[in-house]
Length: 305
Image (cartoon, rainbow, N blue to C red):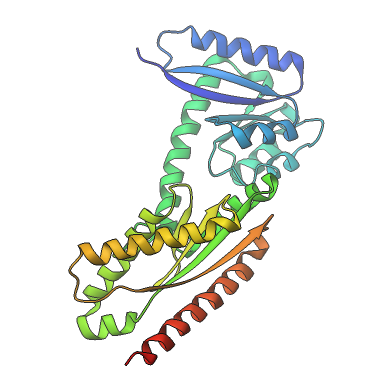
């Protein structure tokens, strides 16, 4: 049977517990009927674990509740930004069951009582946690996606922006936020109907997808308003990205025979070490710059003979 490789991050500082868990995974790896091949990475503190997760992928986290740098519910709080991306299984003692159940309600997939862990229980818990996490992830995706464009909606943008701003701050990374608006959207709807208006919105979404990276967060946050959060993009990338956007828009206009002329206005803000509490401020600044861009374009059109 072809086995699926799984990366397990075991966060545990007790040598005896580490040894026992590694033995269980070794036995499971040697069983032909087990569908997984486990690779286990061990870390003894929350700090070391978070550092590891910045640069490495893991499929499941096994988290002990009693660690040198954090204990109890504090352990989970440290993983707030990744709890919806990676299934977490808590390892607990007999006297911590009430706390473990509370953590499950906070987003942990399941918990294991150390004195009762067998290879069968370990395998079953990991399997169910992965499947449950996939199902919940799909449901969350439905709640944060825009039906018309397939981009993130306003809720999705804020959820991911908060998460990525935390990562950017930890890495001391740069962030660019683009605020984009379709020009004369009301005229398109009034002159050609809302069906053509929807086409303009979908076309804009496709232009943004082509102009920016897969790792950037692209969202439709209003009727004809879009936002792009470009991760680890420096201030000197601004002009390059805007040129790419304008070139993609120009190519679109050449290749598509629409009833309307698609035009976009935009504003850009650059931040370093941004926090999630600054998102609204950044969006407002980018929005103001977008309206200034739109105003200048309108004035230029009025000056034409």
